[in-house]
Length: 417
Image 1 (cartoon, rainbow, N blue to C red):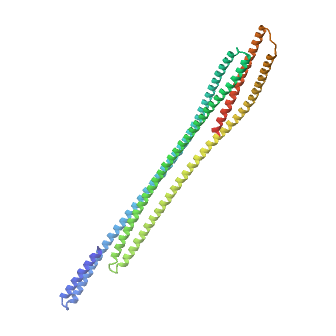
Image 2 (tube, rainbow, N blue to C red):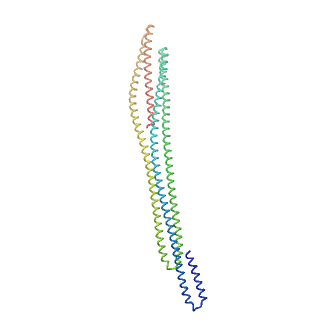
Image 3 (spheres, rainbow, N blue to C red):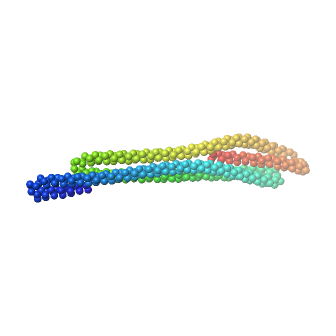
């Protein structure tokens, strides 16, 4: 605008001077030139005054815009700083909350496992009691059948004894197989519940990790917004620089007297622009450092949480191993005691069998006696046979109990190992 005004004014003055030179005679030209020179000096001073005013106004406007931009940048940087501190605080609170939730989940898992173990032990105890009750009922039925069959002959009694022994062995074997299947089914359900609990824990941890990743993505999006704002400010400054360069080129068309002064001012403005650019670069560097520091803190917290989880799981596994070892030692001691008792009962059972064979051999060798003596001897023999049968049944019951305990212990050792 200043250049256009000066060009128009210079063209108007030159035209008026040419017109006056053409119209005036040569004799009065000297006086007119002096007047024109005076007019030109006055006009030149007016033009200089107006240019100084216009330049001062432009300078004030430019400084005001730079001040506004600096305040805007300071406000945005302060807001970004506050937002980052807020995000860091929220992240710390959420990490603490996650740690508390993980601790509660661990405590709940330990309590549920202990409750399940106690429940399984109670169920096994109930099943053992039912098994003993059924065995007692079976033994009572067998005793009744033996009493009924005692009225038959000795030979039929021997055959019946052989048949009942074979039937008992088969029923006991079937009963043991059924109990073995039931115990195996119980152990399978227990392992399935443990696996299901483990899967639920893994799903909850994966859900927490996805939530944590979403929060990280939100923070990165906020940082991208901050970067975009900085880019917009940089573009605005570039546009202002371009406009400043255009104005500078327009000012270079003025007179040579003011060129040096304008160059000094331009140099000063360039220094200000470089300082502002340096401040912006410093702000970008600070933002990048804070972003990197925040990412490192988040990664460190994630590693700490993962290590804490693995450490807790290892401790839980170590406790399970210690319990299993103590139970295994107890089972070994019980097995040794039961083995000794079983061997003792087996030897007693063999002695009883040998006694029964000797009595049968003696009865076959004795001569025939009168009927009354035979009745007395038969009643004694029946009483003795009844006692031996009860002893045999007790021995069989103890052997069955021993075999069921051995099978139960083997099945209980499988999930613990």
